[in-house]
Length: 88
Image (cartoon, rainbow, N blue to C red; front, top):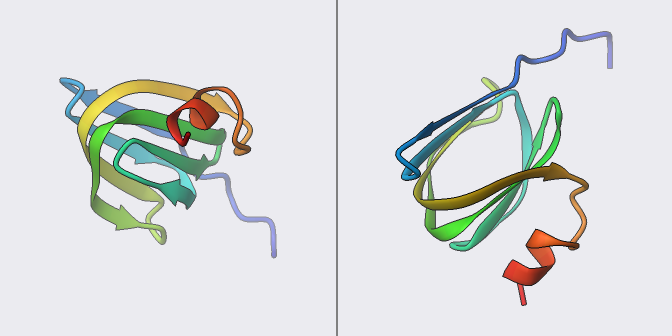
């Protein structure tokens, strides 16, 4: 790949019910209880309940999720910590 400019990364959380993430490179895994999203700033783990993807546009680098958002955590995309507890 040629030197592409880094995507801007941002989070917008509306009332713990709607999350918009920009600077998204990929969605590594997704369930009703957790999601791991590869972003320009590292892996983002989203924990909650009843999570659903309302919009996904990898070309634009944007994902919108709805449901109950309980936690947001940056780190490695491996099953450790928060994600391991959620996926038991």
